[in-house]
Image 1 (cartoon, protein in one colour):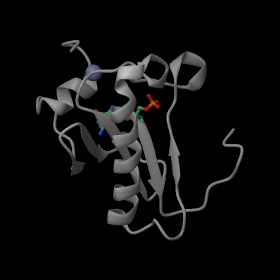
Image 2 (spheres, helix red, strand yellow):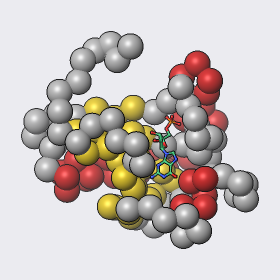
Image 3 (cartoon, helix red, strand yellow):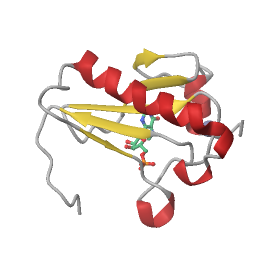
Image 4 (cartoon, protein in one colour):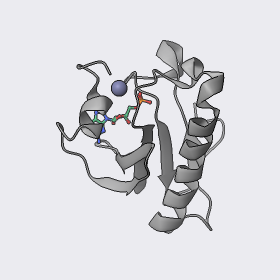
Length: 115
Ligand code: 5GP
Ligand code: ZN
């Protein structure tokens, strides 16, 4: 794990975060700068740079991240209305933290395309 990785440090408990969901492989916490009434980041405990660097051996992990997103939506109470799950990848994708994360956003309506 890169010592300097912000999200690895959240997993390690070195940086505080409001954790809302945990599994043996994943952690989810509230985004510090929420873009929706409920904006949660779901990450693997183990460092992975992004969706682009998931390997075939990470197949189960990738599925668990999506399953966690669905559970969080139900837990947060916006599953029935609909919500958005996205992952930004690299510079042009708008990724600012290089530790794979799914944004799970709900509590308002979203437009498509996002811009
Ligand atoms: P990205 O831009 O890489 O797709 O998403 C990174 C997200 O991490 C941003 O939405 C940003 O607000 C959030 N973020 C950055 N630093 C922190 C932090 O220290 N704590 C929390 N909870 N979220 C953070
Ligand atoms: Zn990391």
